[in-house]
Image (cartoon, rainbow, N blue to C red):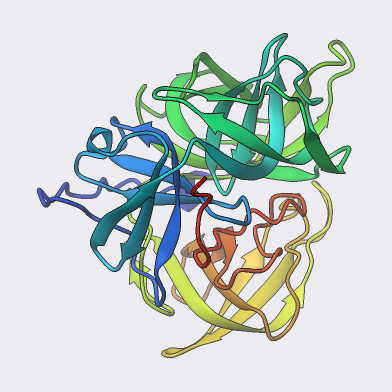
Length: 332
């Protein structure tokens, strides 16, 4: 069995008591608050394009749902309020009156009278309430009927030899991820992790999808970083794509992507099952991966985000949830 132990970051990041800690970025992020995660110390913003951007904050509950905020470096400013926001992502769970939408690692719970099918890549405008999101009009735009993969962030709820279950905001029962041929070390309940999964139809339940693990890393809570920087077992790079070879499906051949930044070029291995990156040579991207077992081994890609306000670069099965940070949020 393939062993993922070496891909995990086992060191927890220190918590620094400051008023606000935001993602470092060359340009300002601007969007509507659509989720507050007090346990993780973060909020999720929906940009004008619908991409979801996660921002670390010391006190996320101090920002009201629907706040239109601008993030510049470590400064977070409230510049307005919105009662609606556009969101894009992959439907990873469908209920009778709700669905779970995964985009750029974050998972949103959305109430809906006509929830979209599990596995679809969708874009929709949600109503932003004081504590929840709703999509009462059911006007969902479907980009694909079956996404290839998605990225999830949550905390470990339970684990056995075949299944890892994560707790995510709005879903206390958790999301079950099949380990398939992967083996991972025992993780303590409550450990924050980032998981990339493939999606496949559920032969037993047509309203569900089967999530199967591709790669896993412990989430150390740091989402900034400079070009080619390393933090423990985490490798980060920001710059221009100079070469990309897409990975095959689960069990197939891995791919690779090379990013040229201010501090040189970094080549990441794209694991099989990662899904299409939707980037081409010349695109500006931000990448995160886990370091190889030895200094000569290439890092393994765990996340790919578009630096600009374009539609590619997430690796979420072509959903385009690329963490775009430019543009304004909806403010009406």
